[in-house]
Structures are given as C-alpha cells and as structure tokens.
Image (cartoon, rainbow, N blue to C red; front, top):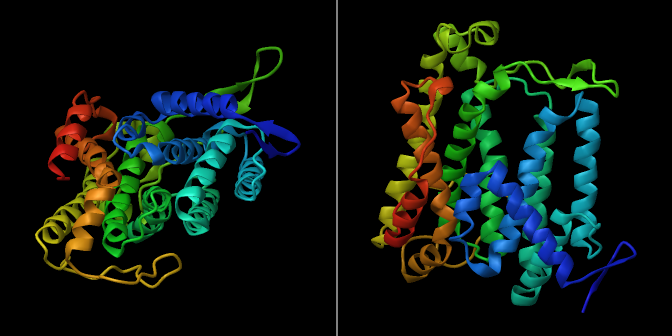
Length: 351
C-alpha cells in the first residue's frame, strides 16, 4: 500500500527508484561508504544509504553554492525536509523517500525509540555541517575532533540506531573511529579545497565568478606550531613549508584514535573492561542501562554491530597511503585493495 506524502503517493516503485539514486550517488561520490554498505545488515541498508547520501549532499554544499547564505538556505531546506519526513510526509525527493521507508521499517521492528534517536543525530549532523559552511580553518586540533564527533561519529551512531543497537561500548568505539574518519576526511580534502574553484558559467558561457575561495582546514594551533601559512599552500601547494609536518601531526591524532579503538575492541572481545571511560556517556542519546563492562551482552552487541566499525578500515587505509606519500596529501595514490581489507576485517572481526 502506498504512503501519503505532501499530497502524493509513495509506493514501492518510488522507493526502488530512490534506492537506485542513492546507490549511484555513493558509488560515484563516496565509494568507501558504497563498499561498506554491502556488509551492513540488509534491514539497515536503506537507512545507511539514505543517511550517507544526505551527508554527501551536505558536505558538497560549500563547493556548489556561490555564497554561504545560499548554503544556509539549503541547510534549512534539509532541516525542514528531515522534520517532515520523520512526521510521515516525505517530499518527493529520493533521499527523503528512502529515509522514510527506512524509518517505517525501523518503527515496525523496534517501535518509535530508534527513529527518535535517528532524528536527533541527523539534526545534529545538519547543524554541524551548517556551522562549517564557510570552510574556515579549525581553531585547534581539539576543535577538529569535536567536528569529527558531530559528523562522522554521528553517522555511525545513526547506523547503530537504525539496527537498533544501544550500547555504551559500541558508541564508545564509534566515537574513536568516527573521530579518525573525520580527521582523515579533512586531510583528504586538502588538495581539493586548496585549489581554486571552477568558475560559474553564465547563460552566454562567460565566467561570472567562482563558487568559493581556496581554503585550508588544518587546525590553526598545529599550523602555528610548524610555521605553516595558508597563503603558502594556496600559492605553492605541496611545496609549502611546513605542510607535511602539519599533516603528520594531524594524521597522528587520527591514527591514535584507531589504535585506541583496536585495543578497546580486543579488551571487550576477551571479556575485559574497555580500558578507559567514555567521555560522552550521560550526554543526550548517550544514556544507557544494563551492562557497562565486559560480558556476554557486550560480545553479542559487538557481533551484531560489527559492520558499523568497518569505517575504521577505510580510515586506516587512507592513513597508510598518506604515510607512504610522506604525508604529502597532494601525492596520495589511489588504493585498490580496500574491498579485500573490508572482507577480511569483517570475517575476522578485527579492525
């Protein structure tokens, strides 16, 4: 039976078309997510695909609008769209249609609680993306970590909520891995953002301006420590003095989070305590009941939600390639074996 949405009927054919759209967007715009989604439980794949496609749309906004004001209008559009979609009235737009289908499925499986958590995290993602519309450098490395927590870790929280799986240890692992992913994404974007943007073409084919100015998002405290200047990167690219040293410092923090997550996972899998407290425990949507340390429930949670942790493999793959390029983000070569790394990690339950 079709569902009523903004005066139109959404049926199975619409959902299938929306699913096809989202998969195509991920295949071409976020190939790592496209690979990982194949390991996500089938009942959660629609939610994963819709959320990752929306994240891709939000991340692209600073690149595709001519000024931050227009970008904020687009962010408000998505904020309103999320609210109407969760209210049961998705616009006839592919991401909304697929997300609504996933919400309906989740509510049928687990009640309204999972959908409520999903909405909380999704609105936080939009709010955080909006704050970064102007592509200004992060004030500090800690600020970059906060951004990664509110974007990439939040995407992982949403996937867990779509299962639904509420676990302090899975959230804790997702927090460390998400921070690593967000930092890696920032480093990966350096060659793109530091280059001049493409000119906007007017109706006659002539240039009418650019979508943005070059940007460098590396933390200012790290740049100051190594003597790196934004303008040097814009003018000299990989030859800018201090660039590789700054990238090394930031990449090391990402790698530290992956090391912490690996050690914590091993402890939990062997029935031990995680080794340190979860800094976000007690915050909204991070309140738990039941077992908070090792045990059969924890091991079961890890087995059930392990596919979510595969984001660590993708982040680690990029960091290894960055290291092989001597921490020059302009010279990182494309990888070819990530599908096999993901398959092996999923089979062994190791990150």
